Length: 480
Image 1 (cartoon, helix red, strand yellow):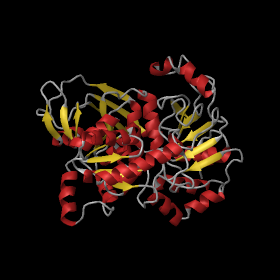
Image 2: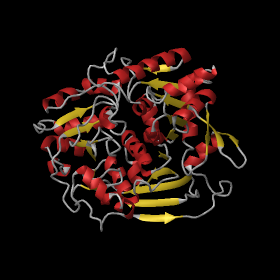
Image 3: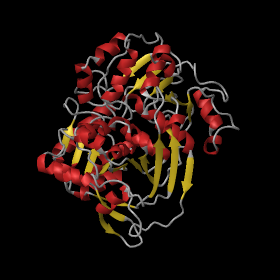
Image 4: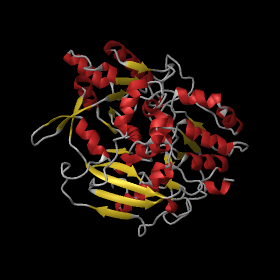
C-alpha cells in the first residue's frame, strides 16, 4: 500500500476536474454565501422504513411531492422472505408496508411493492431496471445508497428529514466533501472477489479512514470487474466513513445499462452515451488523499470484530493488542469479548452456525451463480442453517430459470424471497444470540443481525465454503 496525502487547496478552475466534481458542478442550483449548496437530486428511492415520517411531514404542511415521477418506492427492509404475501403477519412490518402503499397512492409515487415483478432491495432494483445511470445524483433514506456510485453517479444516504426535503423541493442542502482516490492495480488471485477487495481496503485504512470524503475507486483491477462486482465495492464505501463511493463509467457500464427496462433508447441513448463518455477524472485532477494497493496482495478476507474494518486474511491470526492497527486498538478487547474470540488465535476453523448470502452487497444473480457453481455436488454441514436471499424478484426469477434453486436445494440450501433479510436484524430473519453467522452483508456491528448475534463478513464464496464445512474455511482449498 502507498498513501499520498495532498494538503492542497482545491481550485477546480485551475486544475482538471475529478469525476465527482463534474457531476457535482452540474447539479448545483445555488451556492449560499458562507453556507451549503442547494443541490439538485435526479432520483429519489424510498422504502417502507424511512419514508413514513417524511410523508407525515408533507401531509401536515398540506403539500405534495414536487416531482413524484423522480421518486421510486419499494418494500424491502422489513418484509418477510418466506410466505411473502399480503397481509403480512408481523405487526410492525405490516404497519410499515401498509403505510407505504397508502402514501404512494396518495402522492402518485411509483411503488414496486410485495407481489410486484420489480420488487426487491432498493439498491438492487435501481441498477437492474436501468433507473441508475451515470452522471445522476441519487439519494435514499438508507446509508448503502452509495452502491449506485458504481455507475459513475453521486449517490448517498440521507436522513428522514432530508427525505422530506427532497420530496418537497427535489433538492438538498449539502456541503461538498473532500475527495479521495483509491487505486487497485493487478490481477486478482484465485478465490478472491470484489468483497475481498473492499474488506482488504477497509482493513488497511480502517472503518473511519474515508470520513469526510467522496471516494473514487480506480485502477486496472477495478476496470476488470463486472458491474455487479463494482456495486459491492461502492456499497461498502460508506463503511470506510465515506460520504459516497463512485467508479468512472466505461464500456462495461454502458453494456450493462443498454436494453434495461428504463434505459434510454435510440436518439436519447446516443445523446446520453455521449455525455456519459465525458465522466472520468481528468489527468490533472487533484485529490486531497490517494491510496494505492496491489491486487496480488489480497487474499480471501473475513472479519473478526465488530466493525467492517476489523478484517484479516482467512490464513492470518486474529490481531493482538500489539499488532492491531491504532484505530481499533481501544476497541479490540470489547470486540473480541462480544465475538467470543481470543486475540492471536486462528480464525480459520472457527465453528459457525448460520450462513447468510444476500443483502444489497451480495444478492445479485452473479453472486448466486458463483454460489451455485461452487456448491454443485456438495452438501451443507448438517448443523449449519443457510439462508440464500435474492435481491429482487427479477434475480429470483432468473435464478429459477437457470436452475440455481434446484442446485441450492440439492446442497441443502433454500432460495428464499427478496428482501433485506438477515442484514439488519429488523425483520423476522434474525440470527439467535450467541450464534455465529458468516454473512455476505456489509455490517458486523454488535446486534446488527439480531441481539447478541456474532457476524463474520465475507464474500459469497467464503460464505458458501463455510456452509459446506461448518467452519470458517479458506475457500481456495475447495476450489478446483
